[in-house]
Length: 226
Image 1 (cartoon, rainbow, N blue to C red):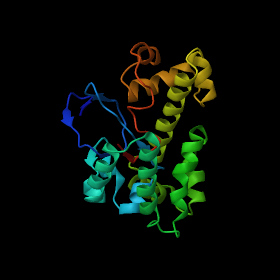
Image 2 (tube, one colour):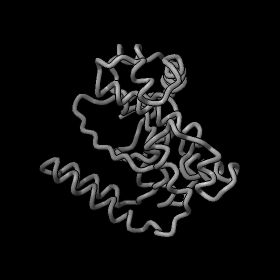
Image 3 (tube, helix red, strand yellow):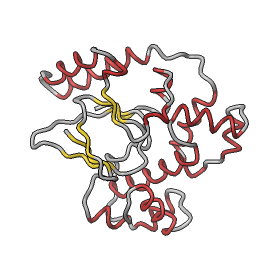
Image 4 (tube, helix red, strand yellow):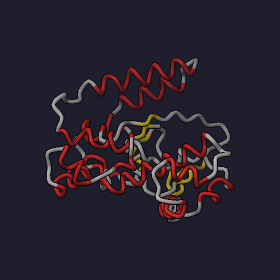
């Protein structure tokens, strides 16, 4: 499978990849017969697992073996030969649960902030969230960038954009102005600005092209496996 990135770069992806944080459109070119199974991880999980700086993975697709070793290859072979979707789901859950057991229970309060933004991006306030994390705004931004890959302000914009996209996908007859209001945008033009920034087009263009609105942009989960 290949991924064509919006700037014209085309690259071939591994069979199982970790999809880093994305801030612009990526187009997948799939063969005629292809089954994709992807997992959305909570923001910051990859940083907690591997202690890597997530800003190094922005807009990148990394072979999962780089992080998980040959165990990923073994998992892939089991998935290919799995007799049902239920077995596939169980195999992936067992694999990830074993990995998550390695996470430390003693996490800094800042590690919870990305989840709060993900849940309600329109309520983002840098000073308030830095205070909740017991950090200065500058310290908070620096730690957040390392944990998530983008600044907290950009992350909140991406999450809100994703909410709007998914809401339209769920309710196609709902007009964009209503969606803008329901997801915390000041007005329709504010929503259009984010669509142009992250997708390169307008909301109506996106619908006309009939693209899956929430699959190309890994906004809410800066670590995605396929």
